[in-house]
Each structure stands twice: as C-alpha cells, then as structure tokens.
Image (cartoon, rainbow, N blue to C red; front, side, top):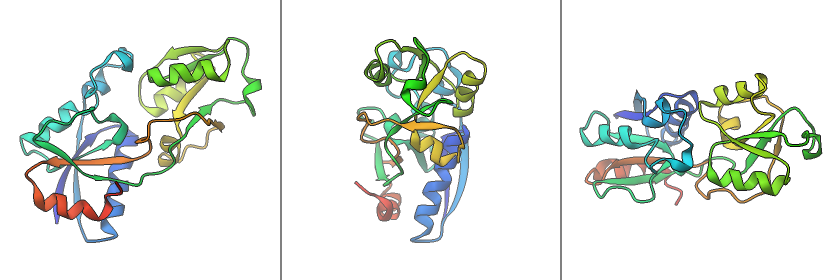
Length: 212
C-alpha cells in the first residue's frame, strides 16, 4: 500500500513520520511517500504561541488533506486544534514516547542556574512552569526548530530551555538536561494520524496503532 503523507518539514516532524511508519509496518507492509509542507507555524517565528490560533501548525497540512494531495497527515498530538473540522478525523493516536519536559542547560542541578537566568519557553503553560521552578527566573518566548532553539543557548540569548523530552529522544540529542516533574499536556510525546472522515479504508488500516 502506498500512502502520501503530509507533515511539517522540520527535522523533528520528519522523524515523527518515520516513527509512525515503523509502527504501522510492524502490522502490514506500507510505503510512505512524504510531502513536506511549511505551515504558518514554520514561517512565523515571531508571534508567541499563546497568541496564535490553535491550528497554527496544522492548517496548511489539513488543507492538503481536503484537496486530496495527501491521504493522511501526521501531527504532534498536542498541536491539534481543540476541535477538528467535521470532515477530518484522528484515525490513530500513537502510544508515543516520554511525556515529561526537560530543562536544557549546562548545569547539574537547578541550583546551578544563575540568578535571574533567562529561560526559553514556547508555550504559555511553560511560562507558568518557570515561576514554579524559581521565582527569580525570567521566561523568554522563543520560536524555531529544536536546533535553532539550542543555538540560542550557544549565542547567550537564553541561559536554558524548557523542551519536551520526546523531542530530545526522537532527535537523539546528546545535550545536558534535567527532567522536570510538572504536569504536561496529556498528548505530549504522542503522534496523531489525521485523515478525511469518509476514508474508512485508512481508518481501518491505522486502527492497529491507535492507542487511545
């Protein structure tokens, strides 16, 4: 079976596509044909995420589903809008990988962070987390791919980053980091396979990896 798959073009998103392919290939042979799509979330790297629409990272990909350029879309589950349009459905939600966040910086413990250290964040939820870690820390909204965010530490723009551990795992990042214990989005680390609601063949095909 050959399936045209839409996803963002970032290195992390590409890894996610092949993760889904490996899972479904364990049940039946399938050939993924990736279609890498730039979304508003990729070209607008200035607007803080908490100010954006909830389909910021998915809209253009889902439009390709509607016009049948692709047959499925693969998204980070936490990037899905709160309510999918009626003509689209999540046909599988993978079991994913680790759900916790990590603090990436060169120290060995939270006490190693300097006073009033700048902490790079990419969501309003993580803004609140920063204040829970230590009251003097300063959250800084950042955008970009994982590697672009890591470069902000090297350039001294921020002292540390809060990042999903799942991203580190999927990209095999050998960076110093400390796991954080705060509650994350329950969909973090999981991947969503989205298809047209009337595509029963695809729904049945991906039911084997649906871990809902």
